[in-house]
Structure formats: C-alpha cells, structure tokens
Amino acid sequence: KRQILKDLGTRVLYTSQGGYDTHANQVPVQTPLLSDLSAGIGDFFAVIEIIPAIDVRGGKCVRLFQGDYEKETVFSDDPVRMALRWESEGASFLHVVDLDAARNGDVENSDAIERICNSTKARVQVGGGIRTLDSAVEYVEKGIERVIIGTAAIESPKVVSSIIDSLGPQSVIVSVDARDGIVSIDGWTRESNVSAADLVKSVENMLSLIHI
Image (cartoon, rainbow, N blue to C red):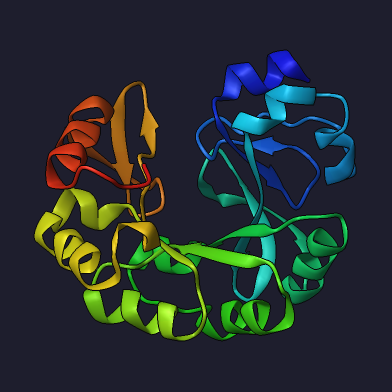
C-alpha cells in the first residue's frame, strides 16, 4: 500500500468501484473498504488525502475506460446511495465529477450532485463543466465545498481568476488532466497545446495559494 500511494502522489481518489484512481491512468486495486486503506499505512497517512470519487453520467455512477465515453461501465443507478456508502466507511470528503458537463460544458447532473450534498455530512468537491463564475457560485450556494476547474483554466484563465477572487482560493481546485505531459480538456476528449508543467506555472503565477 505504501508503494502504491507513493506512486500515485499525495492526493489519491478512491473510486466507487473499489480502487485507486488518478483520473489519468486509473490504477485498479482490490481494496473493498476505505478503512482498509487507511489502516496500516501509519504516519504516511498524515500526508495523504484520500477522497472517494463518484463519476456521474446520466444520473448514474459510472467509470470511463481511460476517459473514453464509448467505454462506460455503470456501477450504480443511485449516486446518493454511493455517497452514503463512502460516508459510512469513514470518508469525510467526496470527489464528484459531472462527466456529461465535463464533455459539453452544460451542467446536466446538478440535481443529483445537490442530492448528494444534502444527504451526506461529508464535504463535497465538484468538477465537470464549471466554466463560468455563475456556475461556480451556484454550486457553492448549494453547499459544495470546492469547485474544480479544468477546461476553463486553459481556455478562460480570466474566468478562473474571477472565480478565485469571488470564492477564495480555499474553494477552488485547478485540475491538471494530462496525457504524455499535455493537458486534455472537455472531459479528456480534446488535447490542448499546453503542457501540464506550463499550466501549473500559470496557476502558480495567478495566485500564491491554490489547490492544484
């Protein structure tokens, strides 16, 4: 477990399917309970934030194989039930992605995400399709703790700056989704011409304190 966590980095998303997920290379591991993961890694756990991930498409919990929308596996018809499962296993934070919105920019699963937020005591961070200040503010007003910005960080950096100014850096995560060092956008369906390193640098220049 120690080696797996070191390989994946300091923020690990633990998927609804029972494995580790970096959303870039999706490394499945047969570990059925979140408590099993935290047990036994000792002081290393102090520098790890383990966040169960719930990817929502068409109102269902799914996983896309390497970001391919044509290769979808449905794991649950009920995102709220999945969120409550993770909460019962000790999760204090949930990572929720609107896959439909990530691809087309339209927030399509906001009702399901709001139900998750209202049904669990766990804090929730949401990504997918957040490309305007209004959409970010709407999520925060619904009780979302953090909004995750991906495509907009490439295409509309001024919008990202306005979101940070409005909500504060503690409420914003910039997601760097990359293949072979190049940032992908629109839910992994398009490749940008920006390297992951350059995007990180631009975000660092934008603000001295931000979640990346």
